[in-house]
Image (cartoon, rainbow, N blue to C red):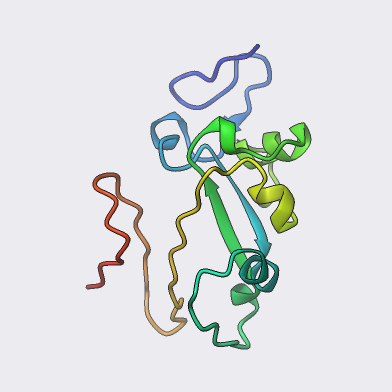
Length: 131
């Protein structure tokens, strides 16, 4: 079994981890899912305002451990490693199958401003700080 080196490359293939070893506590991998399918599968109690932006038709799922990655080995590999392709797009069922819990962050990406979203380790507060 290949073990990622400090720079995120794999000894056997020289593939780079999508987010690097130091970020694996937040993101061991990522996929995208259809936003409406996600909302139907996980009713998290917030009204969904439909907006015309294409980017808002998708949701990103970040996996904080290898245990939570998709069961399909090809999808899990593509979620973990930068294979030159965008993150895989999966069904919500496949994407969430191994997730014991899900934290949902709602944000409206403003096209007119240089907005950033940060995920910071620490006490889980279940609120979103905004500056």
